[in-house]
Length: 478
Image (cartoon, rainbow, N blue to C red; front, side, top):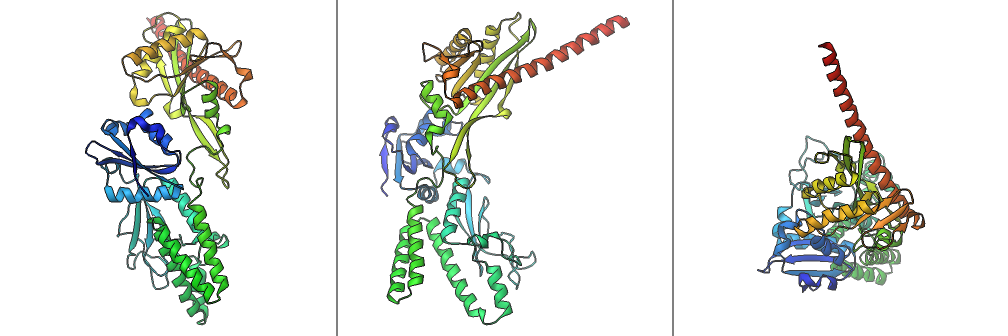
């Protein structure tokens, strides 16, 4: 695995494979290490869609190092090893109790495998003479492997490894075998120990099973610490010995394990971060239809609501691109825009005194763009026609000239004729002729923007009515 380097201006030269990347400063010291399913797209997001963490080190980057790999599991494991080895400044700065993950393996007769945020040798797992966990007995020693930055990816990796090398996850040995036994994902120490107690004949067999299980645990450790090649060569030599001694069943079992290991380390779709079927991604369809530079992951919708000069309000709704996968087959995923209600915002119009939807919209956009901490949208939707589109465009250009924001694409919908206006296209698009997924997304944006603004307007109008009625009652009492 050779580390390749390039300049930040050469981002398009990065491969689109899985791998690990490193950001170096002028002193050639690593600033930050990360992993990716698609190296090019992931590194680009640091530069073109930076969050508050990226802004801490983005200006210091002078070189980008990367190691392309065949699979996501390899990237996950190599990232963990490199963070542990180089201890980059910003990886350590962003680290907290909830950020990094560790795989813990207990040191006992039937080792348990688990994931934790807080590695400590004072783990409150204890065993009694019967092999059951109690609070009063000795504390268990635990080996920790990590840190791993992606908890979801780590869980998926362990699920895949468990198919080849079954391991125990229960803290207390149950009286009866659990579902993992039925799925052939656990060596069932509970059943083995019970049989050994009933008949002394099973003691030898129990000891052999314990030995085999501990060997499997060693193999899991080798995989998680990046020693896959060493493990494969050990298994291959063991398989040959078995074949020479005519133990063909055992040799076949080892052969199957070697093949399974090769498959999981050459498969790129085990840990999914990028759409598996990009044509079914509504974000990609929007990008192509509206001629956008990237898939819009965050869309903001704006609407104005009022009755003459009373209760003039504006609203902002936020839709985010989310992935929905079938439980059993993660490779069949659907991508939809989902309302992010915690990020909705209300605006009470303060500067506009008379009914003027365009002036109200301008005020709302000015106030919204002054809040950089909310994050910037990849696409703005406005309720209205071409005049609303041009009004928003002018506000964004003012902020752009002042270098407060990047260029943001804008779309607007004229309700009567269902025409979709876009700043990058001369002629409007007919909403009825667009793909169903895109049409439904835009209509959902329109309806949600209108619902949120009108509900705020009604609340405000009710308050005004109550206050005016209270004043009248006071005057009449006088």
